[in-house]
Each structure stands twice: as C-alpha cells, then as structure tokens.
Image (cartoon, rainbow over the protein chains, first blue to last red):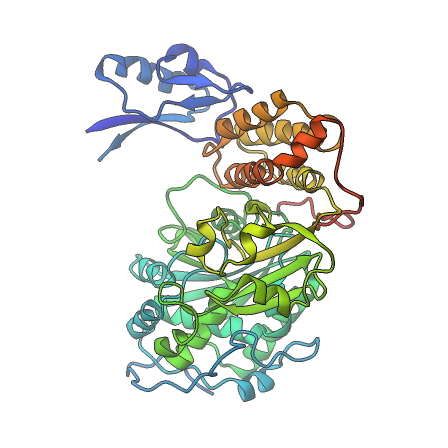
Length: 67
Length: 437
C-alpha cells in the first residue's frame, strides 16, 4: 500500500509551512502555493510528510492511502 | 395524458423522424412550443420500467452534451444505484458566452427538455427535479417557467419541477458548483469526491444532465435506440447541436449528425463572409485550429482529436484573417481570469499573470521570453485547481500560441497582420453578472 499527499486547493491559503517541513515532496509555485510530488512518499520521509500535514494552519493537506 | 411510470415494459417504439432535425423538430417562429403544440408534434413517451429506460439509453449510446461527453446510461445507473431518495437536475447554465444551443432549446422547445428530465426522473426513481437556467438569459428563464406552469396545470409530471435561476458565471454550470448553489451556497466548485451522483443536492444521489442531453433522451424514450443510431456513426451515434458564429453569413445553432462534414456545416451557415485564418472549436476551453487543418474534417470526436480539437459544448467560431487571433486570445484570457471562483491560489494568480502577459504579447510587444513564461505558467497551474478552469484556459492558450505562431513572430518584430480592430468573440460586458448566488 502506497501513501501520497493530497491537497485541498480551496482550503489552501498558501502559508507555505508544508514546503518548509517537507521540501523533498512539496515545492511552491510562483505565488507560494504548494506543488505536490505525485510519487508515493518513501518510508524514510513519512514522518516529515506527517509533520507537514499536522502543521498546516487550515488543514488543507492530508496523506491518502492508494490501492 | 401519458403516465411515464408503469410496471409493464413495452416492446414497440413509435416511428421517429427519418432524418434531421431531431431535437430541433417543429421549432416555431421565435416562440416557445406550447404544451398542446408539443403534444401534436411529438408522440407520447413510451411507458417503460426504469431499468428498460436505462438499457435503451445504453443501447442508443447517448453521451452528455454539456462538454464532457460522458455516457448517459452510466450516469443513470450510478444514480439509480444510490442510497436514499434521488434528485435529477437539468443543467441549463450554459456558461459559455459564445454558445446558444441550450438557450435555443429552452426558449423554443422547453417541453422536450422537460420530458427528458421526467424520463431521467423515472429512470433513477427520483422524487425531486430541478432545472437550472442561466439568469443572464431571461428569455430562457421565462420560457422554462411558463412551460413548467403549463405542465403543473395539466398534471402530467410524476415529480414537481423546480426552476432555479443560476448566476451567469462561466463556471456556475460546473457540476459541483451547481450542486453547491442548489444546496444554498455559492455557484462555486467544491472539492470532489464525493461526486454529485454519490452525494449532491441535499446530500442525495444526484443526476445532472445538460439540457440538450435530456432532449435527446426524451426522443430515445419515444423512438428507441435503433432509431437513435440511424444517423451518426457507430462510435458516435445521433445528432448534436452546434453554435456557429464569427465570420459566417448566417450564424446560428445547427443540428448535425456526428461524422458529418465540417465544410457542409459552414455551407449550411451561408459560408464564410471573408477569408478565414482559423476556427475556434469548443468555446473558450477549446482550441484554435488553422482553417486548412479543419476544413476537410468530420464533426466527430475521433476525427477532431487527430488535429488536437475537441467539440466540447459544440461551438465553432470563424476568425477572419483581418482580425488578430492573439488579440482575441487576450480578450478571452482576461475574461477567464475574471471568472475564477477565487478559491484556488494557483488558478487565481496564474490566470491573472497569464492574462497580463498575453495582453502584452497581443497589444504591445512580444519577446521569446514571454512565450516561454506563458508555457512555464501553463505547466505550473495545470491540474491544480478544484475545477477545470485552469486546464481549459491552458489548453486554449497553448492552441493559440501554436496556431498563431506566425503572428507571435510578427508581433516580436513589431508588426500585426490584422487590418481590423473590431472584437469578434462575445465577452459579456454591459449587464455582466458578477454574482455567485
């Protein structure tokens, strides 16, 4: 089972904390909004991804399980 | 009075018209067909079980006419399989300024659309029916309201139909936006899943169909799937409505069979009024195609896809050589950037930046760096919104940069090939609707 990041683009306000905490999987576009790496999150980086999810002030980020 | 719901299936269909028109059958000069006139022109809908209605729709191969082309039977089955009471919605929120087909059906043959809505209601066993009509087309709102009142007085419908005016925003007819509005919110898209067929109006399984799709459904429920397939192609059966405009002698809405010739359509519209350089196919989410590339083509999804074109909501606009395609592109990009719901940062900011840059390229000066930047932003915003607005705008813009590459080069040298500076594509201005509720 793989895990990926998913963003709610409506909730997202472009705070950018996620990209700071998980730069391996999240970068910011020209206007400060996150671009998610579509690849599965590797096991070693899962903690960083979770930290990014919990730190989002508007709960726009989550980790979803893929079939 | 013909009851639409009956436990007995029926084996025989009424003979349908041999050729065209189909959904435009019997249109009266400028006025809506009244209920008595409608009943004279059209045989009653066959009495059928819900399952047989859905099967007939599947055999007919009907696909949605709102732009996505999704198989209608699949949608019907998905909603019919839903839990709890179901809702059917006729989507008459046309949205595209250059499109006139939904408005034509609603103002001239509203009963055919409403018949289709009732057929859908029976098929999915809905107990709630709504028709959304773009409020910036008041003739359509009036015609539909009057038609619903006629039907209520005659007591012919199994479900009461509610008429809801929808804001005249480009994306208000997007399915999740329409559901959002009907649930008391703004006509702005929401994040899916869940999709409307699972949880829509009032949290219930909701079927949303474009009004033209419902008109076709109303005919399938009379004449059957074999009749439906007598025109069109095996892969794309039946007919569709196309709005033809621009440098055309008789701009209008035409009903054509899938697979018919592009040049025949233009001939039926009276031909081009002056030399044409390109056609915009598919409206403001569509693509600019060079005239020579599209002229010999057929009006089918497969044939058009081979030249990078998509029928979408069926709009074909001829760009004369005398008008600058880049200026028209800039006008549309500005419009699209103003039509964001304001919800997704990459779209709001991206479309604004792109509209500004295209404006510069079209009207002021053009450099290779600007072109690169437009492509960089296009790749940046694609797929990152809650709806398909950024994707449609990107597709439209990329097609412009490709089809008008020579013009881009001319602009880089400070030249423009246009000899006229009139506007071509319709962009709402006076009385423009800025509301979301």
